[in-house]
Length: 292
Image (cartoon, rainbow, N blue to C red; front, side, top):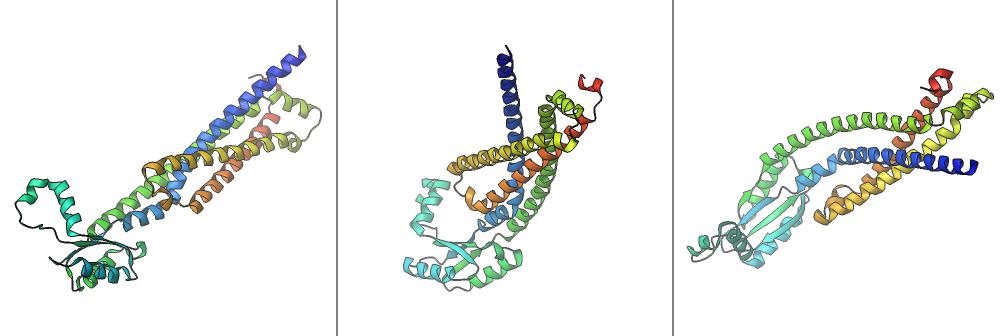
């Protein structure tokens, strides 16, 4: 009979530990997702900026060989990240997709000139720099016109600043919610052992001795939950990569490891502090409160 009771008790404890582990892992996962975006704001900003391309429209009838030579000269500039040459044929096909084949039938030859798309390095992406670069590139002999969307850069920078403030507020809210939920979870886990804690107190065990096993268990639980949350976060990023291959260019391995480290520290710290606080409170409870 005693063996059956012990078996049931072990099952209940295992179930309680597992449920609290899952709860803490999910909380840390949500916190980690927001934290990753907040830490990666600079990388997101650089990625978006470098995808604002400058378009160099070449003079009508420019030979492909001369256009490629011009592209190589531009690519050698210190502020250029990459270039892409769009031939007359490619431009015509793109125009046909946008406006339809009927639009091009009214022209004897393609009205679409060849062009070069230029991606500027993130550190050069300011309005003044873009205007200066546009003036410099417009002096190229084969360049007819330079398309520079400097106003879009200002709009993008303002939008990123606003989103950064919103995400920071969300992160602080998530941190508060995480502390509350983890505290509740740890409290329920330790509260089920309140009679064992009272027994140890009655035989003269000091508070630090009583708290030690629960603090250790909570620390291990917080660390394990952080590892699970980090693994799930990495799995989500891998799934996102299928539809958005550039995801790991924005959130690099160093940033992901930093996020995982912060989650581990946060998980262990919160669980340990909660375990200490709750154990101290249970030790100081009077007899009537134990049955409440």
